[in-house]
Amino acid sequence: MQSGDPSEEHDSGPGRRSGDHERPGVSTHLPPEGSRASATSEKDVAREIRDAAVSLGFAKIGFAPVERFDDAAERLDTWLAAGHAGEMQYLASSTDRADPRHLLAEARTSIVAVLVYPKGRPVKDARGRLVGNIARYARGQDYHAVFKQKLRELGDECARIVGRPVVGRACVDTAPMLEREAAARAGIGFIAKSTMNIVPGIGTYTLIGELLIDVEIAPGERLEPKCGTCTACLDACPTGAFVDAYTLDARRCISYLTIELRGPIPVELRSKIGERIFGCDVCQDVCPFNASAADKPSATELSPRPSLESPDLVELLELSSSGYRRVVEGTALRRVSRARLARNAAVALGNSKDPRARPALERALSHASPLVRGHAAWALGELGGEECREALERAAASDESLEVRQEASCALERLSPVA
Ligand code: SF4
Ligand code: SF4
Image (cartoon, rainbow, N blue to C red; front, top):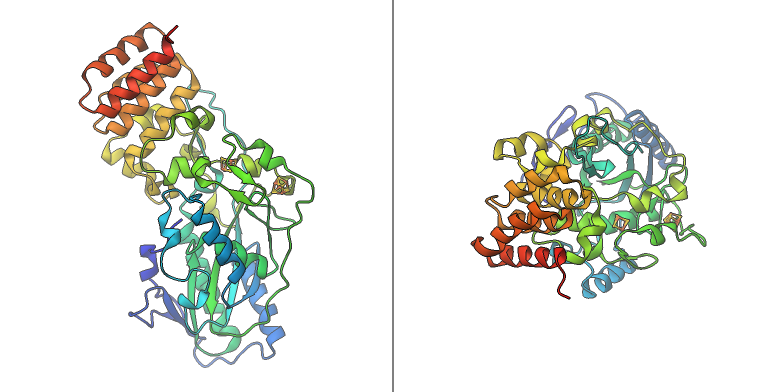
């Protein structure tokens, strides 16, 4: 998940001014006029900030030190050097992601905050449509804006509590791996074998963000891993994406394949993706720490939208430009283009093996995007049958794209293997 969210520019609000146009995202939070600090000792400040966070709907907060995370930086470098990040080259940017001070030079404390999204249930559509699966965190309103707004309100509360202007910066997905490290250092969660951050008593269906502030608060005690001998997530991963405990090869992870990857999905992984069209929850669903996860989100905006709980695969495959905008507007789905969403829907339809998918997949052989046409050809090969064969033969003979012709030929070979 990338930095550079355009919403960083809009920092003004009650009790707040966007004080620094040279530094997008930096806000100065003002105490109410004429007010005095409501807390004087550092301990009271910490307690009052915690209370304010709970009132704002945060499930948990902790205080992390503002320092360079040397160990985490080393692990990130090793992971990047191994090529496990795939196309996510933004993680290797020259900015020192391991040091929060590059985001706010005045920062003295990082408030690490947790929002919860609902555990939800697997959705089976009763009306006979072919439906896909969207990762639970993405079924409601885009959490970036919701989270940042809450962090800024927390910044206003900090100014009220300390009785002076507070310089702050709200960060959501600025450096995903290091946010988990910050959460561990704040003592609110530990980095698990699944590489997710587990918040004891809450689990992993969480979103983590940070508010950097120029107020000194004693940090929490680092939480060490508590997975014990469990390996449920490593064993359950459909694509075998874990190189080992604590190490994920993102190139095999369904979240990467369906969201980050711009080009074709490797053929050998397509059948393992199942009906998932945006992200994957498997390694979380099997985690014992999620056994009593919440059914209610921290904020109503994170409640699932019915259309994203049971997305219609044929509709997604055939979205027009305006239809695409309607579906993704205000949601995390806007991170994938129309063609990539259709690509993912084609793979899910192929994996359904349902003959009702055939007409839409045949129509998709005329899609403007060769990426979609190629994956539709693959999916027709998964469905099989004489009508699919005829459509594939036409595509193999006449599609203008070499890649699509090759996809169609490979699909035909799977239909009639050479003896
Ligand atoms: Fe595997 Fe899915 Fe977890 Fe990725 S999100 S590591 S594909 S189980
Ligand atoms: Fe740890 Fe088991 Fe949860 Fe994996 S499933 S993160 S090993 S507790």
